[in-house]
Amino acid sequence: MASVIVNFELCGRDVEVLVQPMATLQSVLRNQLGHTATKEGCRQGGCGSCTVLVDGEPMLSCLLPVEDVAGRRVTTLEGITPIDGLDPIQEAFLESNGFQCGYCTPGMVMVTRALLDHDPQPGREAIVEAISGNLCRCTGYQPIIDAIEKAADRLSGSGEQTGER
Amino acid sequence: MTVTDYFLPGSLSEALDLLGAHGPSLMVMAGGTVAMPLVNDGISLPGKVMGLRHAGLDDLREEGGGLYIGATVTLTRLLRQRAVPMLSEAARSTASWSVRNMATVGGNLFTPPPGGDVAVALLALDASVTLAGPAGTRVVPLGAFHTGFMTNVLQDGELLTGLRVPAVAGDTAYLKFGRKAANTPSVVTVAVRVARRGDTVTDARIALGAAGPHPLRAGAAERALVGSTLGPEVIEAVAAVAAEESQPFSDGVASEWYRRRMVRLFVTRALERIRQGGEGR
Ligand SMILES: Cc1cc2nc3c(=O)[nH]c(=O)nc-3n(C[C@H](O)[C@H](O)[C@H](O)COP(=O)(O)OP(=O)(O)OC[C@H]3O[C@@H](n4cnc5c(N)ncnc54)[C@H](O)[C@@H]3O)c2cc1C
Ligand code: FES
Ligand code: FES
View 1: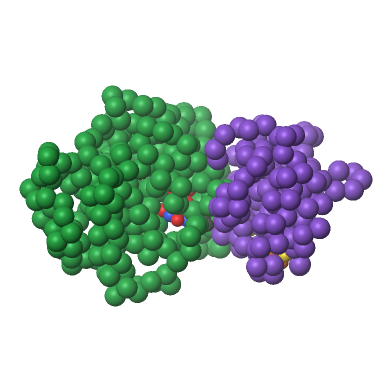
View 2: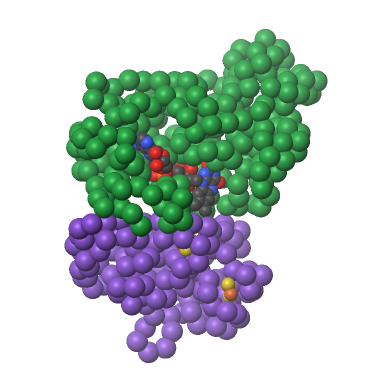
């Protein structure tokens, strides 16, 4: 089987990868590009631990052939984590005990990023709806929802309302 | 992963040519939210796959008071449109945000029960599907698309290119019942549309999901409703007919027994909602 070359933008940098046909974005991120914050939970679209942003919108990298993101902008947790310290969303998760084992956290943070881009001040209901595709086996969700509320409070005003999801 | 070739055609004609050249062994995929999990698990072992994301089948436009929906329009885009509120509601009831950003409206028609939540709403709206193949295109009413569990009228060499939702009369209600509030497989999904002149019902659609081998209409219940006045006794009787003619099944979500009762309850609730004011179309 002949490998193919795919180019896309990853966290602000152009990358070129040589991949097996229809390799998932998840496997390429983790195994070829070292972006291991993107987790591998179910590979069924059911857990959200592999969530990345494609052109700013949350998608499941386990269901996405990497060829489909050619020329597009992919953002992983690595891309929103500053060199020093943490992003305000990560800070809020830390303060609110928004994780225990941390397996769901990268996906939760990426969905939060996209949610706050669309709606800087989501209500609790909108938060629950937004993270309904992301499973957490540890926290019981309330601390995560608290963390997202806290992040929204801190960041609101800085984001721009782009409308409904 | 057994895939040796993954094609991403840039147009419908290119896609049809590929389908013609490779035959039925070429697996077709749109949003991939149904197909990719099977590939990842090794349940499906395709050699050649064609993705439709770039095939230009993603037009979404208002048309003659209705809507044209390209096959690869995502559920997120369907959710955001305002022309047909019931379709927005149906999209919102389906899966989760990130799945909806990938999943397509066309793909929903191929999703086995208890999936097909958007198809249920499309059935109640008299949608038709456009199929394109080497011999040209044909239009089939959605009600005639499914022929059984995971079977349909699509022929080898054909692709689903889009759906048309005509301007239709009446009030609508859409109710999906699952075991969680959001991102949940359906116990039962009900979409109804009722047109009335004065108090008399002149036309009715009662579409059911997770209540048969594919999304289906409760034809006997519809006939029982037309000509009557929408009141509590009529609603109760019609819901009983719908439950009777439904063909529910048991799975990890619910038993056949429970689903049949929920068909009755949710048809009742949907018709009650219309009696008390409807949602508008
Ligand atoms: C976590 C999760 C939750 C879900 N929840 C729901 C839910 O609540 N309700 C629900 O209804 N569904 C649900 N689904 C199923 C699925 O997301 C939707 O049904 C979706 O609309 C399928 O579209 P797709 O484009 O992703 O399908 P794909 O996986 O791309 O397509 C599946 C098959 O359909 C055929 N096909 C698709 N498009 C065409 C075309 N244009 N022409 C010819 N053949 C075609 C192909 O054979 C293809 O292999 C869920 C899925 C996941 C992963
Ligand atoms: S690994 Fe992608 S959704 Fe679970
Ligand atoms: S913190 Fe363990 S899964 Fe969420």
